[in-house]
Length: 78
Image: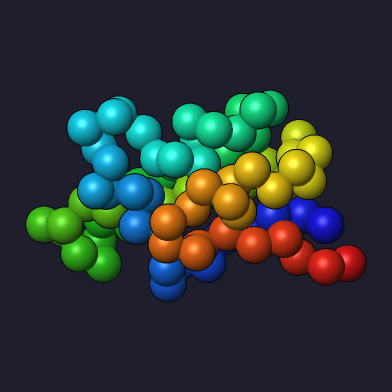
């Protein structure tokens, strides 16, 4: 069951940026989640980030699902 990110919900934990990263990136035990910048051409004055999961490295532990305050991460059933 790979983890998937709902881009409509994920805001890259911008409310947590005082911590330097998002909750899912910080808590992932295998470090398979990263933040990437959204396309700046869509909103050049508002740089946003969202989480991306490397499902080849994901162990399906669901820690990211548990720590995401926006409910943006879920496990995709195969």
